Image (cartoon, rainbow, N blue to C red; front, side, top):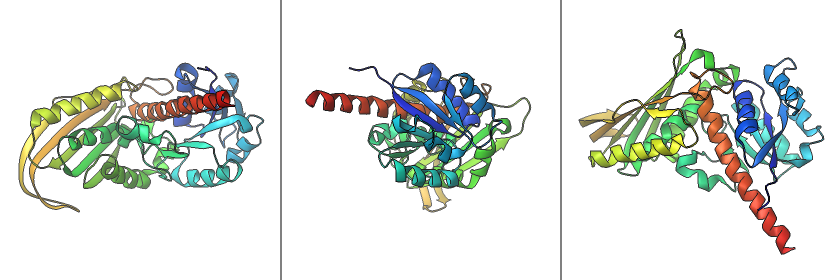
Length: 318
């Protein structure tokens, strides 16, 4: 099979975009970075990209379309904000209806994607939403419980270091809670989901920590614990710093009233997760950055692999 890599662009030269750029340059097998797009000519991300020989523009998505490499780009990662992604998608779609967008904002134009849960369903989509950093870290755990027993209510609390939250993250707080809550239901399998994010100002900065609560009917606790461990191992394949902090905890509950669900009786499952970043751009405490960019790259690599195979089959047929 041909080893030709597909060309990709990143819109957003901040923390997430720059970390993703470094990951692509170091680890991608099926895509290569052709362009980095920003709006600040003095941004560190654009300067780094230029030093690495990547085409750059500080004129936003319009500037991307004016670069000579634009016609060859198959995949665009958007690491801006939810509101900006909606505009970017509409603008690019007018010029290139078939271009693939990997959305790292909570805009949720395309279907939610958590690689270990429903990644294979996203490989032919033109716009894929990577939910949020908190969603990437916690929804796999909700899904792990859901494949054993129906989850009536799922709640996640994502705590990240304040220093790891750039302007884009801070601008998306409302969208974070809404998108993550909905994805807990759509992808995680909970009847009702709720998401909370905490920006922790502690010094020195703490690593990303996530707490996942589920309420379900009574079920085999060993089966749930085993499902959680297997899911954690699957996430570790592309996020090595992802780990369970302690054993899964179980409690019997009687007549607990939950919002949007009503009275619930059964089993409360509590899961504690820590995400240590690979420190490609920000320090290791920024696991929220690492899991988001790692998940986006995972899906883009699988999409590129499929596109390359389809093109090769088409060329052979001709």
